[in-house]
Image 1 (cartoon, one colour):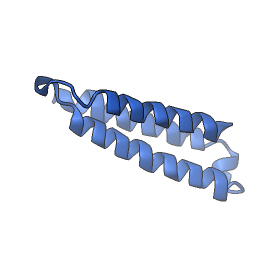
Image 2 (image 1 turned 180 degrees about the vertical axis):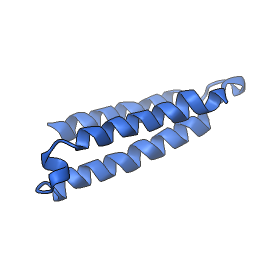
Image 3 (image 1 turned 120 degrees about the horizontal axis):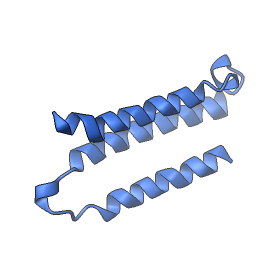
Image 4 (image 1 turned 60 degrees about the vertical axis):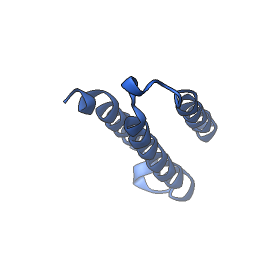
Length: 86
């Protein structure tokens, strides 16, 4: 169930990137999208790997994977909202 929902969220994220590819040049956020996509893809791969192949580890059994997901979202926030301000 979790993997299916995450797959749908990742698919929606890719569709959003595809829909915004023709945005005007004054508002170019392609670097932020690329960084966010890289963070999201790598962290999703690691999370799925931990859930599927390392399910007996303490990291997975104690729901520490949720903190990994929170860290992923904070990194995406950093790349898209905080770094462009500075």
